[in-house]
Amino acid sequence: MNSPKSKRSPTIRDVAAKANAGRTSISRYFNGEAHLLSEQLKARIESAIQELNYRPNQMARSLKHGSSQLLGLIVADISNPFSIEVLKGVESESMNHGFMAVVCNANNNIELECEFIRLLKGYRVDGLIINSAGVNESVLKVLKETTLPFVLLDRKIPNVLCDMVGLDNIQSAQMAFKHLEKQGFEALCFISEPIQYNSARQERLESFLAAIENSPHIQGEAHQLELPNAAQLVATISTFCQEYCGMRKAIIAANGVLSLQIAFALKRLGLSWGTDIGFLSFDNLEWADLAGKGITSISQPTADMGKMAVTILLDKLANPNHQEQEHLFNGELVIRESTFF
Image (tube, rainbow, N blue to C red; front, side, top):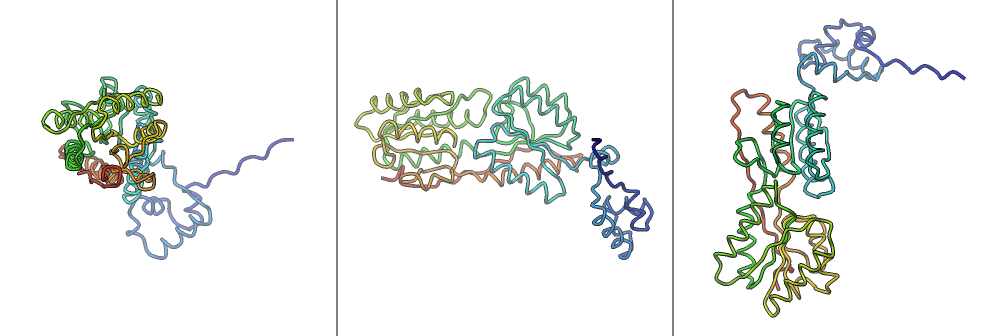
């Protein structure tokens, strides 16, 4: 049995015929010049578009007009709550300006991120917003090769002036440390995923170490752990508790993903935050107010960061005199019982 032929998609010529209009009028309607058409003609065109269910060929339009109205968004890890909130901000602001976001998940793989950058250029996106899995020489090389305008999210390129939106990590880390100091904690354990190629983690760790060095009242240590590694995390926290036995102690998680792992580790050790040990997290997760006595957190205006990245990228596209800028948001300390006991 022969399969039926697929129905032909309507063309701009079909719309013109149905609306009893010239193709030039149809082109004006779709290219932002509808104000040049009479109200009657616009009504006929709209009726024809609806009846035929016509959709413009965006790829063809991008070839003709030099703009695809697409923005590429590369996130380091789509499972990270930070990435999800950034995505919401990027999508909403893009749509407000008539653009759509094409989202790629690098899955914390720098090589995959480089492939996505090349791929998105092939799809003729107008620009890139990149929450990098890690900024190294490979990423720098491929960014130069693509020549696409880009804005970095959360992570910087060391010693390179470029557009970047993120958290003021130094201000946020200092704010967290001062809170723990005020609450009388005597020993702190800062736990992070590996900091290589990740400026946000580097700044948080360096700020913590500087604060410890300058404090006459608090001792501390820092650890970098690959995830997932539950056994190593449990061992690290257990050793810290033994070393500073009898002292008022707290754990600091460098990001939201790590916070969840630390929460499980504390449960395995039979430790209750807010009673046995303090607990502070960078990233204010949805469950942070519900778990146990609640987890004190550094909240980031993450969706606003995504919106700002779009704003900067669109200015970069429209303004030939655009000056690269670093836009940093202040963190907000959300105090809960995990450090207030």
